[in-house]
Length: 149
Image (cartoon, rainbow, N blue to C red; front, side, top):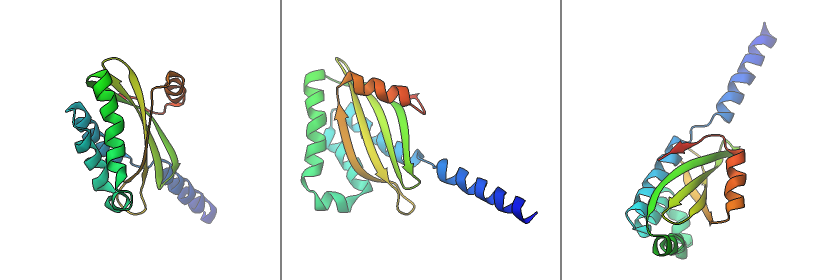
């Protein structure tokens, strides 16, 4: 009986660790993409900065770097028509990567964001963007969850 209880606790603990709740990070990204849809990449950068103000204070150029990357796509590709969550990569219960397909008028862009959760809230850590279609296809092949927005 004691072994059965221990086994049940181990299985329950593993399920909690593996099945982490990323909804807070996904909500941050929804607000982020709203800023991009409004052609306001600085507003979008502010959304990420709110989750990790210390990082943005330590790296003051980060906000302009993120906004500048998206401003390039807004200028050359017109507007963001929508986005789709392609993949959630769980590195550990405290670290997760969210990969999105940003759908612009003229081309797709893969946006991958790392979030870290040392306590109760997800904090933005890093953003990477690429227009490389082979990278987008690789992420789709590994995809755990898809959702249109």
